[in-house]
Length: 186
Image (cartoon, rainbow, N blue to C red; front, side):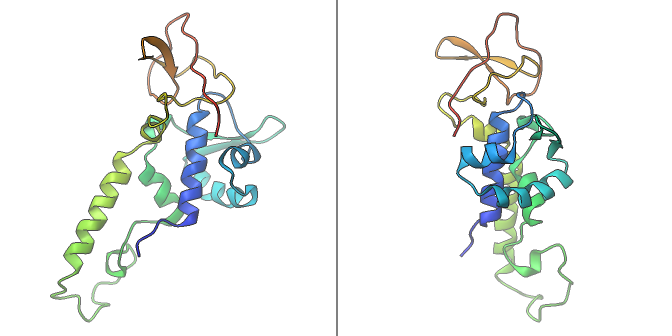
């Protein structure tokens, strides 16, 4: 059965937590672990490939931790999955390291086109979905931490008639006098 690995699931949950906190400064792995009910030791292992892929940045020290390297709207789920797992390949013959001719049934294989279409569909969904898109499924659709972030990188949005800021959006400064939106973490 095709199933997302625990590594990818936990990694994406950690990244959405960082997306919600975007613009608020670094968050410790312990903070992320508590917010997402994940084992902190496991998050340490996941942070390494995410950092190497340039998706997160870390800061050392008492107020250190991790934060997204780019705005949530500029980070695709596909990038995260590939950083944690490598390329998507539902069958061996579609993997990046597959040697042509390795399968005796390669020529005339009737199922390979199905797996190729599946791979392309999965890649398209993952690559066209950003962390900001995932945060937009919150009610209300904002990405914020429990601490109000600074004004940099915010776009003014209207939700139910009241203006709020969405730190997941790419772009300009918030208009003067616009207060950041707040939502409970978790």
